[in-house]
Image (cartoon, rainbow, N blue to C red; front, top):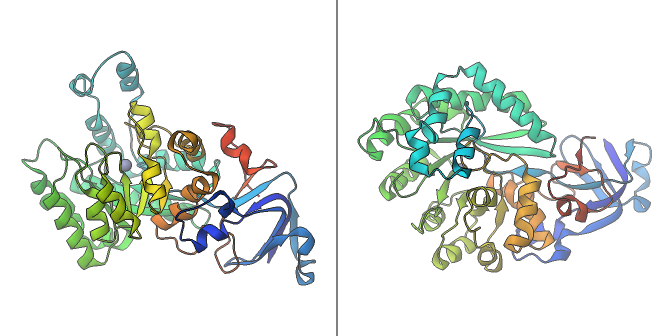
Length: 403
Ligand SMILES: [Zn+2]
């Protein structure tokens, strides 16, 4: 049993948990000043003011942390962080006026990452991703989703799923990794159609016992020019039969009803949602599917950000994630993403913190965390500052520390 006491602020998000992460007002943060928390390995036992600490906890293993803020654990619910290669040159080409096609003609784009990822060994990919996660850990992130999808061949995607599984074992229990199978990320030019690729790569992998034994969910890039409505329905029906949760890249380029399909299949999350119409927003609001917004990507590409206000005000569960990937958002810092989102997208402070803790955890099916209340898992992040206001106010600065 352990106690952390004298915290400048302990942010419980207990009211936000009660409201299922929806329709939050600033007070739903629930800030306890001079806070204390008691927990064992499995669960939180007590939360309150240090001065109210029950006598039975006075002589247990205790750490005093004045000048620190404790929050529910930060969760990054959308990353593509297993890849090889370097696309920084492409970024410079883009700054200098090159368009997508010119970059692709010069060997850039997703094909560049695909070739480098296919060439890299399992050990090399593991080492690259491990070092990225070691950096991410420094931001206070304790749970992390990782998608496969940069190899786009049967053997290559099997390799990526194995790498994510190795990372999951390596970082547990300190970092919980959610292994998302996303071989349906793009269609290589060697295939005649997306359905041919689905049959020859995606469904074959989903018949492989090793893959089925280590994945936590399945994702698809449901966008014009990538995968069709039929591909998405076929995949989701297949996953439903196998009892595997699904999630979807939806409505990024146009409103193709991705959010609505997500709700139909009780997806864990629908992600991007830059162009979702009001019908999609209202379906999401009535569902348990988390709307995962990825402002880093729109920001990096110079596109308008998602209409977060529409999702928040209609009662959706909204999360923010990094979308860390080599092409459209090479940013691994979730708190920086939250700082960008805050005023630009209209999050109040409770909506903002629920989006990177409680609701992000929900998108990863982590039901036993996301708020600091007795009975939930003792998963939290700690920041060296006197006030939670400082954490996203100082955008780009990292206050996270380890105990
Ligand atoms: Zn993505």
